[in-house]
Length: 114
Length: 116
Image 1 (cartoon, one colour):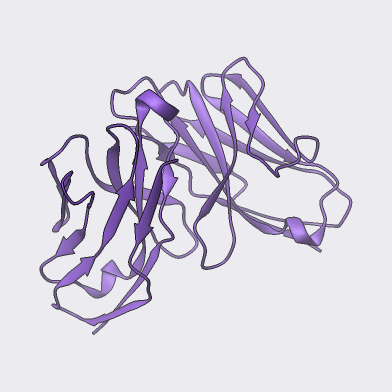
Image 2 (image 1 turned 180 degrees about the vertical axis):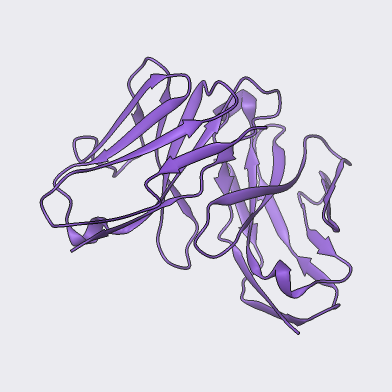
């Protein structure tokens, strides 16, 4: 079945540091890939998405590129802020095999210190 | 657009009582709604998937008589935790998906249930 693996956390960075959170996936079909962010005590917010190979999703300074050859969708940001502290979830969905159902990674806790 | 609300945001109840959580899509028609449970510092666990007008599909290990799901309209789904016990205390999150091309789910803000 489909699965998503994220780098283990927690990740602690200083403000303005470069961020990478690794995400790899296995899927039988051609999934769409997502990054969600969860702030404390809240639900999930879509951060960015990519629907086909080589697509780059971007939002609020975050980027991720859909790499089919390495089955990866790593999240990057050039300069993190304290307000980026949250839990980040990588996820995939394959409409042809599972409709709108999402498969989530384990989540990565990011803490950014001033 | 694509806003999903949940009510209540927090609820505390006594053991043995039932609790209903509402999930509404405010500005789109949700053909499918999902209910998740999240334990502290863990990922989301899918409990069930519901399509408007039909019975919910429960994930393995989730008691359908314990967690009653109703999806009566294209904008409302409810989760009722029946005869709640302390082990049911958790963060419950719903999401909704419409007829979009790229499988996007929109998430509610979550409901914190505490059973005393």
